Length: 245
Image (cartoon, rainbow, N blue to C red; front, side):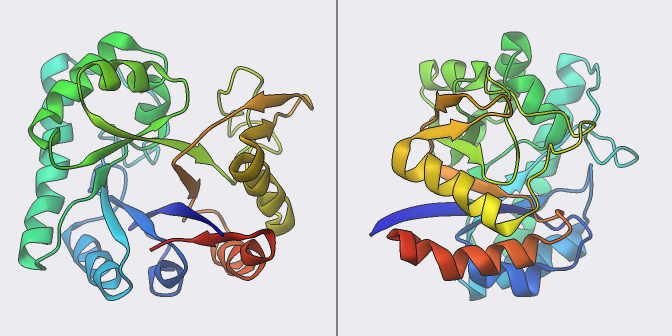
């Protein structure tokens, strides 16, 4: 049996965490700048503790209007300040709940920009340098931020998206494009099994491209995220794969 980590972005206002967290092994909690607040952070942390789910910070560009999914041009100081502030806010909640931070995963446009921008990656890594020894950084496969973080000695886990389609260059298909999100549970299962067992993914052009990951994401704000996770929980063991807490 192959053990895998499945992570979900949570605390983003969907309200499905109570049912979703028992089915996953890691969560990425919105830290207030694209969604969420201290109350939702505390609630999700409590659920995560109850179900032995690893807890991650999910910092974003400060852009609630666009849910953090639009790139922003921030100064080095402004980006550093907002990223640190978001993580420290979650850290204060974790301290109150006697829980620990396992990882950091950037959200949305910030995540995508870090994949291709070395200057931005250096700024972001400086912003989270205080956490370098203690937590993991979730990064896209083959990304610039993965390369820079590894060079700088960060602990990294490479991430792939089980519910998103990819282009041949391993960039995510734009959410503005029809079919960017895979919502059919059976298709998500096929996508995930291909990556886990064969270290390959089928791109939108039909090409098979190498992809090796340590953690796999299902977006918590996908309309049927709970249905997808319930299906995966039932079907993955039939493929000799299990979600490992």
